[in-house]
Length: 368
Image (cartoon, rainbow, N blue to C red; front, side, top):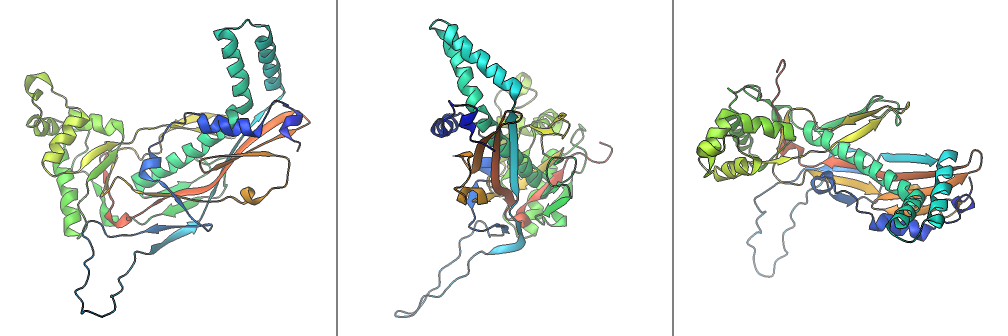
């Protein structure tokens, strides 16, 4: 291992830090549904809390001691904080490209083309910092969507081929009774979608749980909902141009009608990630369990718990270190063959809170 500046003299840690700090990273939906929560230890834990009604104070005598009330504590669902890592190399052929770009910058006259070439040189130096940060974010997005749509996740040699080789199961213990099948597959025009939604609302009330206010799903599910004759009839009452002018309502019209009847509204969670195997094959995945609608009380489903990685405490070594969000980024060089390695590391995992109040509705039935 050698200092990256021995291979790329123009590399500067301060410039690398500025590059990632000013880069317009895409905001992923997990960041709102599972906001960051720092943990001082290498453990994560899920929490069950009571929603809605406030805890009442006591009426007490003057000159008496105030009574002490309980605090919501973590459940027994806990585990070790996992380590997420991703790295990418710049190899000899990439160095040849850099020299060609640098030569172009020297030869081109001042103007937009020269500025474009200069930007490509800058990107060559620091673009892998963005790549590894995005890689950690993408894995968190996938984990969060697995948790949100199934209440658990499983790491296997298929969906995590380049990582842990043993199967890892994490289950946030959504009650079995909260896993519900639709009365009829939502692909069918006879499906009673509004009836299914009302059923979940009744189930929450009978279980003495707060009524769900949000329904999380993918765009494909919303399109099925919009095509359903029962939903179109239900929505038409609240949409002025529905009669004759708009046969298929949009999500805003559907949600307006649902809200008017005191029913939960839809929230679409649409994103894709790339799953890469050891041999370089890439597969586009969404992470969401197909056809599932997740009912929740709030728009926050849990937290992305994280802690400081061991490498952040180490000052020795020749690697250049930067930080982007919760991701520690290291860059160093190798002499034979000449290589610049950029690695991103984060100790983190999304965790589901209040699992007892989550309902999972399967809208695609066996054979559907």
